[in-house]
Length: 235
Image 1 (tube, helix red, strand yellow):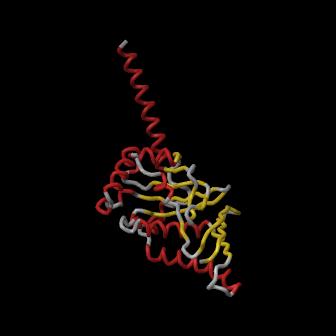
Image 2 (tube, rainbow, N blue to C red):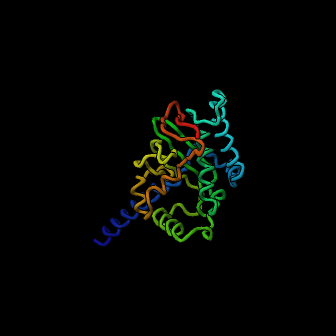
Image 3 (cartoon, rainbow, N blue to C red):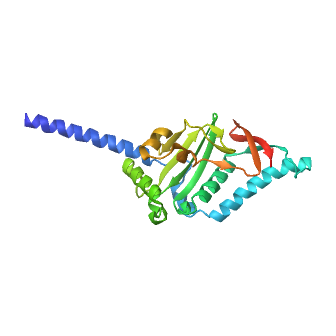
């Protein structure tokens, strides 16, 4: 009888280990676009150059339609077509600007944005162990500690964290819909459920994908041919 119990417990232990390994493998799987052998190219993101590239994109996109009318001083209809790479650069610049005190440039190894089937997925390969806790506020520290408790596999290694949802306009900014999903490796989590687990406002997670254009009053957004099309009026 004791032998049967031991065998049963051994089977249960093996099953648990298999489940843990399967989940660990799913969480720590890096996306195909990220090449670990070239990771050195992304170890430190130049915040200044990223901001400059972002400003150049907007400047070039806005100057063309305004030059056609020759009326830069008055509000004019504007239509912007942004490719995946352009959206990626703009979102990265916005994220680095918002989190300047935390210096995420040392945490982010690479970023990527994909637009297809009416949705947009934007994410980054990060190593949260490179995040200096001294630069975090009390709330951010608590959120990070909870995340590490819920997802212990995030420690001491590179992982992919992304957000996928429908592009929408909110307070004159491009962001994603409230029914979006958070991806960690190859696992998916409902954004609102994850926010509840982390005890934070879901908007905090959505704001990771948020792009404001100060010089344009936006009134329409749509996805077309792997691009984001924005319409509005110049200010």
